[in-house]
Amino acid sequence: MASEREIIEVFRKIEGEVAGFIGASLVDLDSGMTLGAHTVRQNFDLGAASAYNSEIVKQKNKAIQALGLKSALEDILLTLSDQIHLIKLVTPQTFIYLAADRSLTNLAIVRASVAKHGSMLA
Image (cartoon, rainbow, N blue to C red; front, side, top):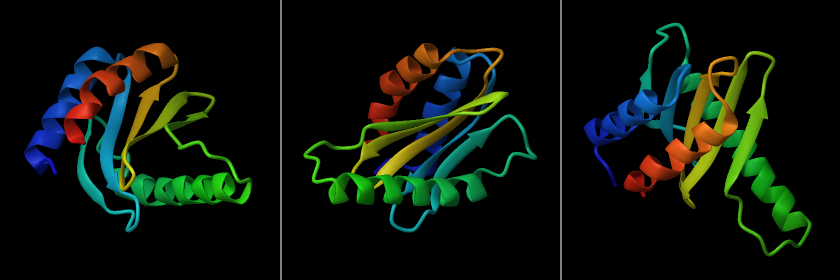
């Protein structure tokens, strides 16, 4: 497991590539606890977002199981009127949650940057 300092360094690299970066966190799925986070908006509560998003991932995994699918969840995209929120599983127990300003970036850039740097957190 990466240290908090290493997690923040990964998110700073992503921030440098994603225009409109708001914040990102590495989250423990079971507890919803933030393992490391970095934001450029101090009023953006990454701790609360991490906890709520862990519930989204848990519910989606339950749906996959209930449907008898043999697939594994890779990511979830939430598109808001002004933001893109990406939830990307790093391991079965952890995920990256990232928020970016929708008017300044696009999903392809967000996904590419998270894929490029997020693997360092596995």
